[in-house]
Amino acid sequence: MRLLRHRTHLFAVGLVLLNALVVRAELTDAWPLVVRVDQAATITMTFVNEPALAAGEGLVLQYACSDGRRSDGALLAWGTYEEIPFTRQGDTIAATVLFRGETAHTLRLVSPHEKTGMKKPRVHGVANLYSLKPDLFALRPYKGDVHMHSKFSDGRKDETPSHMVATNRKLGCDFAIVTDHRAYAGSQEAIATLAALPTDMRCFPGEEVHSPGNGVHILALGASAGLTEWFTEHRADYDAAVAAEKARISPAELPEDLHYQAAASAVVWDRIRELGGIAVFCHPYWRPDHRQYIPAELSDYLLKQARFDAFEILNGGSSELSILHYHELRSQGLAVAGIGVTDAHASANLGRAYTLVLAESLDIAALAAGIRRRHCLAVEVDPKTGQHRVHGDFRLGRYASFLAAHYYPRYHDGLCQEEGELLVKAVAGDTAAAEALRPLQGRVPALFGRYWAN
Image 1 (cartoon, rainbow, N blue to C red):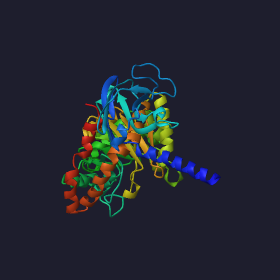
Image 2: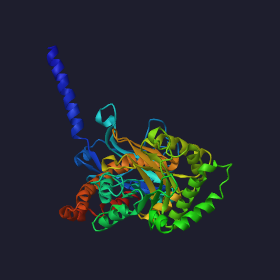
Image 3: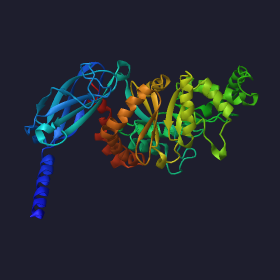
């Protein structure tokens, strides 16, 4: 008898669980994702298992602002949600909400526990949104890796610059810059190859610069000409510029035996900007052979002078000290942009860091402007967990963390991966893959039209 009662109880529990599964709708899409601050926006949510929405259980759309306020500005009691009116048509519901403050917001469609007999509300779907002030709302986020090497320098001898760029697309980047040592031509190969293919992936000119007599590593991103060619063809101009810059440095600022490298670095950074490029100080705390690759006094001086547009916060094993120094410089009031790069010498090492730039468009002039305005963040990706860790300005970082959690993995990265897998084959000469790219073109740029409010 006891066994029969036990079986009857299990059967009843099973029916309850089965009922819960049958009547639960599932959210498949919600848009827009990013809205204007302090303005009303209509959010549309679509579901599968649509009959569950008509199950007569008194569906409720709940709203919560991460800053703890209701849509009318009043404080929201802890543990509660604000109920929002909505309309329903088939598998779609829509609601208009005033999103206050620059922050994250949540909408969730539930069947209240009073209606279902369950201890907690039955959640059919959760939509996550973010509201932005006008300055940031006018910009769009673009992911890119801007420091890598190919067979044109000391990368893998079977990997072309275009292969490195295509692999970045597969990993979710919108742009990439190949920066071979003393080889502007590497990036030109990538640009020419991708220009002949129907792809939305962008690449731009780049080079890792090693100027005569100077041990400081420098990136030239987007410059209209190669710096190595300048040293070769116009050495007298370089020498004169370095001599003039060296004369301005006081021994009280820096030991005299480091003046030449400091002056040469400033000259190169200035020349990069003259050529329309972004000047970057590479891996200040890179430590090969158990020592810093340039003297600490020199790196400290260059960081405090900040004659460059950005420096690498993230670059392989040299990241920790760069992160610490970056935040110290910011606390001292120094305005300096930080970026994240892989410095990969093989495609297998790509994807571990990237720079997120907020810019008006995906072209080098707009990206350069975004970096110079410090509308950029360094993001590291944990290869085991896939977690994204953001370094930079708090306001931008909070937004970037939202994108990393709710936009990129759900909407953006899968499209990039599909395109990138074909692109890797296409840059290697696969004509069928190149043709298969054609119907995919335009999908990633179209995301902004769908998930950013009009």
